[in-house]
Image (cartoon, rainbow, N blue to C red; front, side):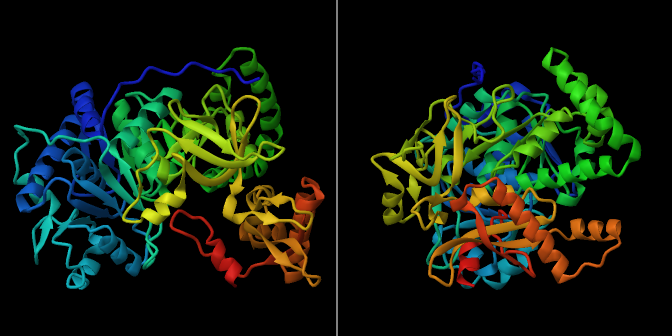
Length: 568
């Protein structure tokens, strides 16, 4: 039985505007945002953030924007991006974050579909904005967040801020239940799906989340994930600002370890792939060192024992060198976006790092369930957030069914798409499309996406994600995709396409003085499939595998585009 710890007391906020005002008052001259790359606004304290929001908001009104106008933002993670987002919220506009990784057509389509009147963009997108200006008739105002001068009808964001003062006589009135943000989860022509969120949705998620995991003014978040994504935006930007912490923007994914040290970061938000790579690198370093390979395993066992009996700091002391590599201050790794490997979570914890995972969707602002520091299960999505109702609809004999959610964090619906909105709800419950179950301790477990389910020949449901999680643990497998395929008897069998891990094969080749051939690759992957099958019941076992020549095509959030694999 997992112990149920009480929740933390957190400040009550009614909107993001309210959050900005409260945080400026409480944390004043403390650093709020910092950019580790060189940008026009490298850092802001809470007071400076408030002042810049007021100045930029007044400047937007001066050029012709009004309350409830739609303003888009696109660019790399940086202070100016966050400032744009927060200004829109503070001044009662509707923010439209656009994924910088989308192709040109998708970007243009989102601008069109969202009825955007102004766009704030980084230098990267100036050429596109200039080129397509004549096509976007509804888009009236172009603002470059990096440019230091107004030019060719494009405003300079730093100049707009500079020209204003920070006094404001009357704040815009926020209706917390009105649409405040539109996030498009798909940008293709005619299929754009804009999730409408309110300030109440986001504020509720922040309060509930921080009541489960304690975040405070001493916390420094390193931001590495794309900021347009709701997971990074709510948890990596708004969460530290709400709690008096700070958000620091990494220069790139390649500089994460250096940037953790520079910032002295206490919290890192990542996707499972980031932690998998991190853990593999740590373990490889131990295995390749003759002394460490002998002394680390017994040290893990000893510190497991000492921590169990009350000496909580033993791991940080014993594995001090490893902690120093990550800046020496990390107190929490948080995983989201997909299910992490429980072995990686356990492994990082055995070196003294706290590791938790959560589950959520853009439509739920985003967090639905969260593990806690002292109440967690590495194979579970977590416990439902306070104030949210989560149920399993039409559970089967094993308690498995579609996950339904109801509560203050659930979206208004899809922008200008009543049909999709109606399909997404069932008597007030939001249908997540995810299949899962609750265990005896109240933890939510995710089996996979409903649309990916394979029906085996004996009528059993097979969730590809479960099989993929097992196969992906093999060091020779970089990633894989499981799906149903017809065999020669027209029977549905489980098949998998595998992308191999080149580094693992090169290491194997050099260690064993053997040449890498297609036959060797097939033999090793065949063994990996056999090992995975040992953990699976007969109806879930992989019957056919293919080794791919190239990586899977992915979305910008690094999810495999399954429909393309099936088409081909």
